Amino acid sequence: MLESNEARDRDDERDEDRDDDSALPLSCEPSAGGPCIWAIGGGKGGVGKSIVTSSFAVALAGRGRRVVLVDADLGGANLDTVFGITKAPRTLSEFLAGEVPRLADVLCPTSVPNLRLVSGSNALLSMANPRHSQKEKFLRHLRLLPVDHVLLDLGAGTNYNVLDFFLAAHRRIVVVVPEPTSIENAYHFLKAAFFRSLRAVARNTAVQAALARVLDERIKRRVRSPLDLIAGVMDIDREAGQLLRSHATGFAPQLIVNQVRSDEQRALADKIVHVCREHMGTRIEKLGTLDHDQHVADAIHHRKPVLQLHPACPFSRGVRGIVDQILRGAPVEPAPVEAPSLPTLDVSRPGAYLRACREALGLELSQLMERTQIRSLEALEEERFEGLPPGPYVRNFVVAYARELGIKEAELLAASYAKRFRRGLENAHA
Image 1 (cartoon, helix red, strand yellow):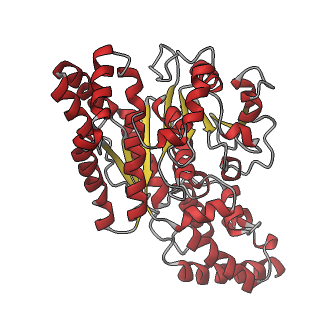
Image 2 (spheres, rainbow, N blue to C red; image 1 turned 180 degrees about the vertical axis):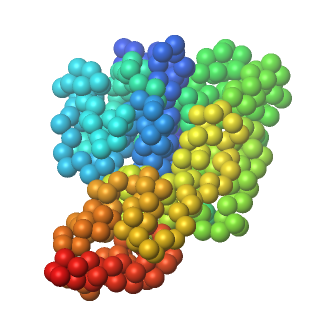
C-alpha cells in the first residue's frame, strides 16, 4: 500500500481484516491515570536496544517511579539474561496465547525495587508474529497496569508488529550506533513507521483519494520519502496535504546514538536528525548520546543491570542524565554528568578510606564482593586483621579493591595497609 514492505507483510494485513476488533486504532493516547508507554526500537540488531531499554527502566525505578519492562522481542527475547532471571514463572507468550487471563499476572519481580519484568523468553514461533487481535488485547492490558511507566524493548526490523508497538507508545525512541549500516537502517525504520502511521489520517476520504492518485502515479512522481508523498498530495489537494503535513509534524520520534567513542561520533546525532528532517519532514528529536563503555559488557557477563553493577561508569551516568532531563521536562540533551568525587586520600586509616570511597559512590558491599570476588571486604574495611588471609594476599586485595573503586593511589594505599596489617598482627601476638 504505502511502503515496499507491505508486500512482505500482506498476510498480516489479511489477519487484521479478519479479526473482529481490527477496526480499533492501534495508536495509544495517554489516558488519565494510565502509564506512560515507551517503545525503544531500531532497524538493526546489535545496537544495544535491550541494554538501553533495561537501563532506562532501572534509572526510572531508581527515581521512585513504578516501572514495568516488557520484552516485546518475541523472536529473540534476552531481558531475562540482563537481570539474571533463570526462568520467569509466566511469560508474555502465555498471555498472548490466552493461558494467563491478565498481563498483570505475568509480571516478574527483578533485583531492582519498583521494577518488574514481562518476560518474552521461550516464545513459540507463532507468538513471534501475533495477530492483530492479540496486539490489541496486549495494548489494552498495558494501559491498565497500575504503574507510572511501561517500557517496550522491541525486536529489530520493520515488520508490522514491531512498527505497531512503536507507534502505540507515547515516547518513541530509536537507538543507533555510529556505523553506516545502523544509520541507514534507522532511517528506513523511521520511514516505514511514518508510512505505517498514515493509516489513521488516511481514514479521511479526501486524504485517501489524494494518496491513491499519488501512489498510482508514483513512478512519475518519484515518491521516495514521506516528504515526497506529502508534496504529491499537496499538489492534488492542498487541504489533504495540510492534514498529512500536520501528521508528519506530530510524528516526533527521538534518537539515541549508542556506543559513542569520540566527539566526532557524538556530533553524528545532529547530522542524523538533520537528514531525517530534510527527507521526512518530521520533527526528529535528539534524545542524547551514550558512551562506549566496557562496564556494559562486564554487566552482561555477570547477568546484572549495568546501573546496579557499575552505577558510576560513564554509560550509567549518561543514562541517568537523559532520564532525569526527561522527568524534569527540560531540554532532552543532557549536560555532562560529572563522576562522583572521592574523598581526599587518607593513608593513615586505609580501611576507613576504602569504606568512605565506596559510600561516596553509593555502592553496597555485596556489589563489590560480586565484582571483585573478594569475600573479606568487610573485614578489610574495618581492619579486622585476624579475619584476613596472609600478608601478600591482603596487599593484592587492597590493590584490587582500590582500583575497582577508581582510587588512583591504589599501590600507595596498599603499602600503608600492609604496614598496619603487620603491626596489628604483631600487637595481637605480643
